[in-house]
Length: 209
Image (cartoon, rainbow, N blue to C red):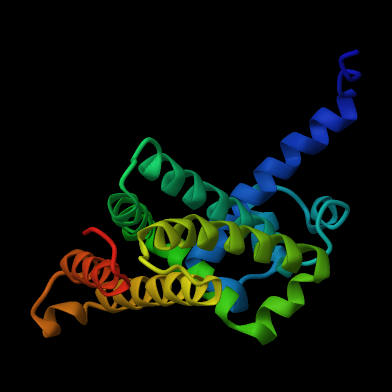
């Protein structure tokens, strides 16, 4: 049997929640996690702080929700980019390029995602949200790792994960340099450097480029 239709209050709460999350995203993108406050988010959402606390206990919890939505959208882009690509090396290049294009088009979301690399700050999200974000990050990493595994002549699981992690680290580093307008000093475009790194990685692993 189909589930019961949501009550008026549930519909209202869901609508309010979407408004608050959208407002929080704007505030976090403008001021970062440190510079944001529940009061600022409430003002951006056109509500009172009292309307937020029944739904979100803290700005860190709100940040975790915003970051989770960003990771979900990014993962969907990567899946779409690799869908139907039979050659692992090509799928890997498509997947990494999708990450690059997503964060290049949404630089503020890259800035937000860097909080994941700050263990002290991410621990403030609470164990439930921290575990959810870790699963999402692991899912994204697994998409690349699977193509690394298929590309390697002699796949070894710890090596596969290490190579996928190194690829994402290199990619993020390029994006940070590009957004800081430092990449031109190196004399190359970030996208060209990424393609070069990925191609050489596949060749080093013994796969077809």
